[in-house]
Length: 71
Image 1 (tube, rainbow, N blue to C red):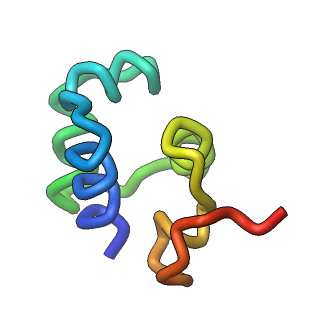
Image 2: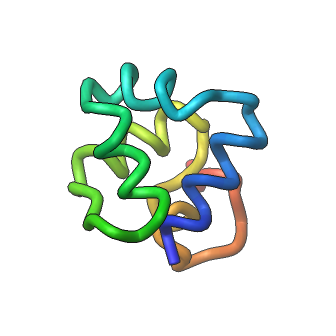
């Protein structure tokens, strides 16, 4: 599930939930719910996360296990 991936990506980059929430322009508690799978993440935020982590939306969504974006 995507919520596991976004949590792993965040910790791999040594980001806090607050830093990612600030980047997404959302409340930290809302972002925390995305990571726990308690709330669906909007497509626009998936795209922003892919840009932040330099990966693909397919990787975040679990469609592929390849973290490198296709160019």
